[in-house]
Length: 255
Picture 1: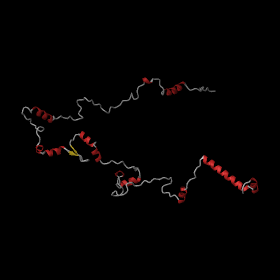
Picture 2: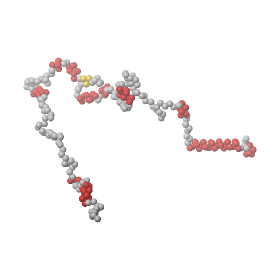
Picture 3: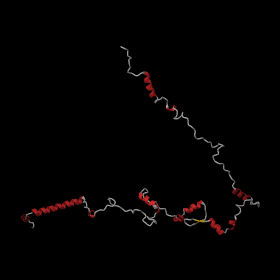
Picture 4: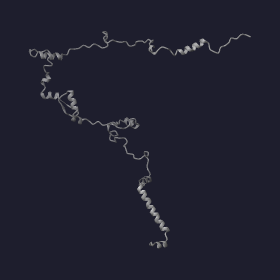
């Protein structure tokens, strides 16, 4: 007989090591503190170039030239040259203009004052502090138009969108119609005390039955008194049905 090689039931050593290596790939013995951060080996392209604030070649903002203020120099010359008799070249601050010189005192007073367009009160100063003080005064607050709360109609309703398409504003406090002569609310609110459906009509017989007084509940004392009265009434009825005349004469009772 030819010699057959003996087959072993266990797998070979090489195959067993290969299977173990596949599972070892998922589990490593490197501690967490020694692992590299995620993406440590990736190379990123720097798309944004950092620009230093002190870069001399930075020209993103155009340079602005500071122009000297002539009013400061004019004020200084007016103070210095007043005692020497000299006169500065620019006399815009020291001398009034021709229109100011020709204006009357009444016109100058009118120019310095103004009238509030809300309450028609004359204001003497245009400073922001005086403006805030005037706006907080009672006279100005009373002259302001009253601010009404917005309408409580649901803005998602189809009827409101239909009316708004024709130019009706629910917050304008005007009625329906082209000139606002109609009712202000599309549906007048009416108190509903019953649990019936909208538009249901109650028959008259049910209304009359509902008006009848309900039986009054008796207390314990009233129930006891009522039982005693019924008991006495029963005894009197039994005496009337079962009494005999000869027995009553024997007992001496009047018939």
